[in-house]
Amino acid sequence: MKRYLFFLTILCFASGYIANAQAGQQSGKIDTFRPLEVWPDADGNHIQAHGGGIIKIKKTYYWYGEQRSKDLDPQYKYVSCYSSKDLLNWQFRGNVLKMLPPDTLTAKWVLERPKVFYNAKTKKYVMYFHIDDRGYKVAQVGVAVCDKPDGEFQYVKRFRPLGHESRDIGQFIDDNNTPYLVFEDRPNGFHIASLSDDYMDVVKDMTLVKAHMEGGAIVNYNGLYYSIGSGLTGWKPNPNKYSTAPTLEGPWTEFKDIAPPEKNTYSSQSTMLIKVTGTKKTTVIYMGDMWKPSTQWDSRYIWMPLEIGDGKLWLPEPRPWKLNIKTGEVTFPD
Ligand code: GAL
Image (cartoon, rainbow, N blue to C red; front, side, top):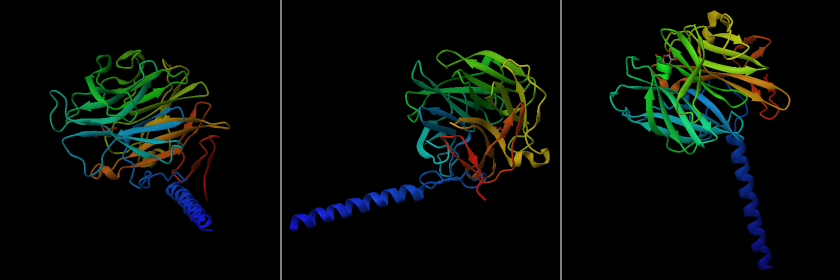
């Protein structure tokens, strides 16, 4: 009898524990993208990954971005890393880069728009970022590497890609896995350039688009390349635009609005286009930042599925939406 009671107690305990754990997991999860609202990570903190980029390693997405929390040590610049299986529920994996100003740069330096590429040959994660002085005169990219997606990245070097000024950078990985760096070159326009075999250098200009645009992002959708970018108005939003081309080399069409121009891209600025190839549908997500220059830690995000195809691209007015990460289908709750 005693033995029976003992097992019964253990059983009750275990099932209660499992139920609680499941409930905890369930209740901690979110199921709807809510553009412009605070976006809590798995610990309930607003996601700090501004001007970011996303890569997918097997079934896991990693989101890297500017860490701009309030309580940071101002001596350093930080890049954060989050992981997710569904692009919506993100786990903070730590600040993967914590950096003092390198060599001749001084205290008020700038590290923005980090993007990480995974090199399957070298098995290294290679991070590019915009590195600058406070006056934005240096205009270079910085490179850091790591053996793990969420380990401590080590700074390696900084340079002007192909000898050109480089401020905002963007990342594009084509369907055949070829990586490209998009970089804004103030005197000339923006470049889409390929990387060396080890990804540690920028080696070849695919194209120079002679449009003065930043926040550059690209997607390959149904065999056509779409590029989007913003005007050069700093933190202030402006009407972002898009262009298309049959190959990365061009020719690129005239730029057109992605939303009613008076809406200023719904107060956001492009940073990336994410393609989700599902079993039923391919969805392209506009990933944009809504900057709050004087309270940067509270800067928000607009992620919205785009209306895209046949050479047209349109950002619908932000509203809550859901994504089925398996099928790629999008729904809009009432
Ligand atoms: C924006 C740029 C941001 C940041 C900001 C500073 O144009 O996209 O990444 O550099 O200017 O004013």
